[in-house]
Amino acid sequence: MIIDAQDIEGQSTFKADICILGGGIAGIVLANELLHTNKTIILLESGSEQYDDKVQALYEAESIPSVFPNPRRSRLRLLGGSSNHWENSIERFSPIDFKKRSWVNDSGWPFTYEELEPYYTKAEEYARVGKDGYHFGFWGGKLNGTDIFSNSASFNSKVTKSPLYPTQFYREYGGNLNNAKNINIIKNANVIDLTYDNEKQLVKSVIFRTLKKDVQHRVDAKVFIMCLGGIENTRMLLTFNETHDDQLGNHHANVGRYFMEHPTIRAAHFLPFNEYQLDKIYEGMLDGELYIRGRASLNDSAQRKYRTNNLRIYFTRLSKLELSTGISSAHIVSNSVKKGEAPDDFGGHLLNIIKDLDHIAETILKKEMDTSFFDSAHKFGGYQITSMIEQTPDRNNQITLGKSKDQLGIKKVKIDFHISEYDKAKAWKTLELLAKDPSFQTIGRIRLLKERDSRLWKSQLGFGQHHMGTTKMSNNIKNGVVDPSLKVFGTKNFYISGSSVFPTGGHVPPTLTIIAITIRLADKLKSII
Image 1 (cartoon, rainbow, N blue to C red):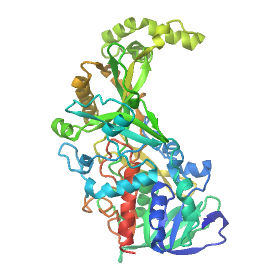
Image 2 (tube, rainbow, N blue to C red; image 1 turned 180 degrees about the vertical axis):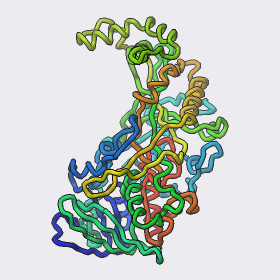
Image 3 (cartoon, rainbow, N blue to C red; image 1 turned 135 degrees about the vertical axis):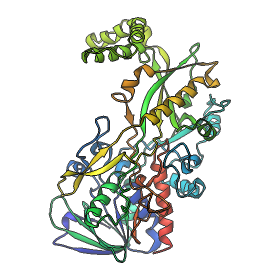
Image 4 (cartoon, helix red, strand yellow; image 1 turned 180 degrees about the horizontal axis):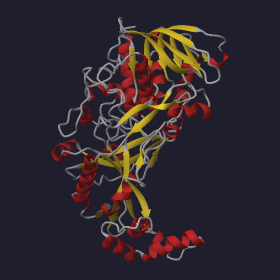
């Protein structure tokens, strides 16, 4: 059954065996997995079935770095969460992502890929991406694609899978929950606090209210699971700890630490010889209602050998005009002149501008007169190489509470985030390995765009909109916030699921792993409730 908190009269107390905070992907999967336990379940969701800008405004941060996307726009606060606007791009983390790597500080998960593997299989059913895996050999054979890295010692090709119609989790699975006799979904219910028995280490209840009424309601339960999202999990845990003296997983000030994203750079071009073109699988192809796209990454042995982080590498077809180095150099020189300074390698930029005068002229004509003079500029030129970066966990990348408050009286977050010079160097190292890889020697060359460094890591920097870390999973209370079962340290009945528990972020989207660890959590809860 679904209840609108706005229709609840007076202060009310609800009772359940299990209370789930958040109706996004993790919350819906968890409720669905516990559906047949015959335990009573209450799921609290801040939003409703439809988008509401006033509810969305609760994601507003007090401060963020200038290059960082505003979480108010990158996450959705309604039933189904961000599955309502995602691309449904799905891959598994690699086995090496779960291991301690001596060259990656604070790496290592408290369980192995092998333990999570069966849950990945079930997670793929939830995400509607089929059972045929990500091996390029299988998909290349099926879609007539040749693996350009078949003879590479360092790189391999894999595929990313996406349903043609992205899976919206509430639309897909909400009906099961709404019709279940043992589940109540309470929408427009904003959690603002909890009650905690420090002596017994038990969360006793959570407090919620609506945006419209300053009337507090309570849910008493035996077990509580927070599934509010990568940033909001942290925000609310910090809020709870202000009242409860850091006894909820924050004994060693780890809540909010190790915030990670997937920075994305366009730092190289692939320029084929003799008009050679990659097979279409690298641009993306449909197989029934499944979209398959080939991409490249370092294999595990190369990561160990070169002691580097991984990159998720895509190839995007571009025209000669779009690949122009002269246009980029003109931007760099222009920006430097405005600041009254000369750019690094001014001579190199000047040569690029002279070499590409036709492309610069074409750009100006198109912008000012909406006409084309150099038709050759729009012919196929090669490929943009786009790279999604695995960040090294950094304790100083942090989410904290600010001074300003939202409409509910909850403090907004401050996000301190940077990309370390170490991670930038590792990204360039991997792209250098790509440029030297024998796979390209007979078909073309890789051009690294190091002269664009100042723009690549600022105005041209992209993000995966993947918020990870900050309630880190660990074997011990000193190094984390939750234990391997996702139970918050210092409690006996309070759990967190979502990408905030990830110790490392990998180089692929986190959603499949979020679903997998949530199914794993459901199995553990079934054994104790």
